[in-house]
Image (tube, rainbow, N blue to C red; front, side, top):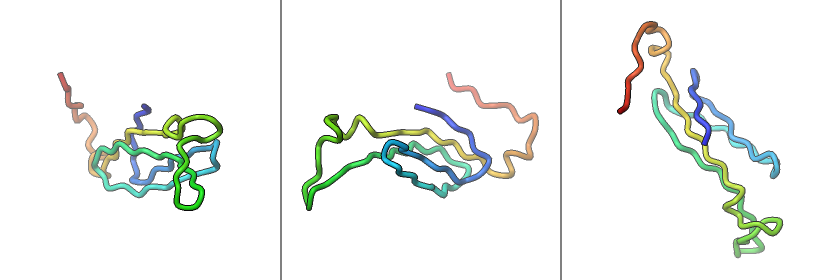
Length: 83
């Protein structure tokens, strides 16, 4: 899982193998865990496999931390420690 700290509230997640991109507008300051999963269907029935592999093998999850503009202007503010 990848962690990103953003100064904006917009994030793009890509699944290049499927030529799929989703752009998210997120509220700051917040912490998000976002998942994107492809799934194909034939009619009303969802397929369990994509190219011979279970569809969940293609899911992508990212942890996203957004910061507000006020946080950017506060230099010297110590990071919280979680123990």
